[in-house]
Each structure stands twice: as structure tokens, then as C-alpha cells.
Image (cartoon, rainbow, N blue to C red; front, side, top):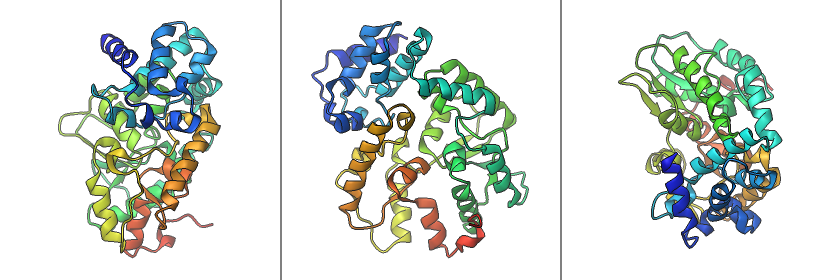
Length: 332
């Protein structure tokens, strides 16, 4: 916890240099929901945060935009997720966090949709393969019906780099447990999913950037020679997605905030479940920036795609490759 304590101290004594960067603070105009306010409250609350403090801890999507403007590169989400865990232990957790953990214990994920049934439906249309390069579709994409997973598999085949589909035990990476303040449950879940992938090296391709980052940084180590992939700013990659997009369309238009300075869609960090009105406000602000571009919005995240009404980059690539949507989209 020493590194968390130091991160908190650096935030507490900072003159709020990253205040403008937080999408939650921007949407609410509340000082208590600025990075400085939330981290300071976490430090003051210690192991006994009240319900109002817990609500403040909920005001983080994990987008790391604040880190871009921090001289110390503080990982504010990590501090706040630890604070959420303190709320869980103190009995002051938000109901959404409790429901998330309960759903994981019963279903292995936090979604209301039967992800296992969706996964089996996607898998039924695929040829069995022994490939150790696998698509880990993730709970966000599967909860939307699985079409994005089908599109990704179709694109990979067309490009001559076919992917297998990670097995039924790999429905969710478990990140939402961390976001809900249940790190021990996350460790148990991640360990079980990691073990289900087998003992040898594996290359995992993710549709959700947060999942890729969670597996890289929070899972038990994968075997030597393994790789975890996603093309996204969240993993410090801003060039590759734009190169793919530029190849697939006539013109790429960027919003006023883009690249490492991009603003958040509000769909992560359990914010839509914990503080839904705030999440909706953030999405509205981002949609306004995208609308100003006068072009259809494109993203590389299933959750952002849903929040913003945007097309996923994978779907755009499928269209560019001339893949009929009837070959990978579920019958309506």
C-alpha cells in the first residue's frame, strides 16, 4: 500500500493541475469529484468511508486522462478502486458494486444477459481450431449480442490471420470486480480464467481496451511468449487505429480532443451503474464533440460504441473488406 499512500499524498498537496481533465468533474462541476477531491477524500476517509465518500469514489471511469496531465503520472483510478474496496469492507458500498459481485458469484460475469448462451451461439458458427491466438470477446461485446465478436472473427479470417474463440470459461476478464471494490474476488476469478486457457503460451486479442489492460497489469502472469493485444489509446497506442481507419474510409476527421488528449465516453469504471446520470452527461458532452466533426463516429470499444451510438472500427473494417453483414450478423 506504500505506493498508493504516496500517490495519495502527491495528489493531496498538488494545486489541482489535472482538475480540467476529469470527465466526471467536467460533467458535474463538483470539486469533490475532481481527481484531487476524490483522492483527498479517500485519504481522509481511511478504512471507514461513509456513504457520501463512497459515492465520490464512484465518480471515476478509469479513463486515465488525468494521468496525462499529472507530473507524477499518478494512477488515480487505482487509488479510487482501493478506496471502493475500503467502502465494501466498511459496509458503505454502493448497491451497484454489491450487485456486481453477487452476479459474478452466480454467473461468472456482471451482465444480465446470458453470456454463455451468446458465446455458444457465436462459437456454433465457427470452425474448431487448435490455434493459440484467440479472440477474448469480453462481457461488453457478448452482452450486445455477439455480432462484434462475429465481425472480428470474420475480419481475421479474411486477412489471413484467423483467430480461435476463447472458451466458455473466458467470458469476462473480471475487471468489473476491481471497479466494484472486490479485489479478492477478482483475483480468484482471474486465476480461474487464466488456468482455463491452458499451460502454454497464448496470444489474446481483446475487443475492449480495459480488458486488455487488466489482463496485462492485474492478472496472474501468462506463460512466457504470450501476448495481449488491442489497438487503443488506453494501451498507449494512438497510431494503429487511425491507420486502419484511414485505409477504410475516404477521410478521417478528428474531434477537438483526440489522441492522448481524447475525452471519455463515460461507459467504464461501472459509472453507468453507479452514477448513471453522470455517465449520460459525459456521453452527451462527447457526442457533441463528435457531432461537430460532421461525420459518422467510430470507436474501438464496445461500451463506447453503445454509449455514443458509434460504429466499431472492427465493423468498419468488415465493410471495407467487402464482407456481407449477413455473413456475421445475427438474423433480425
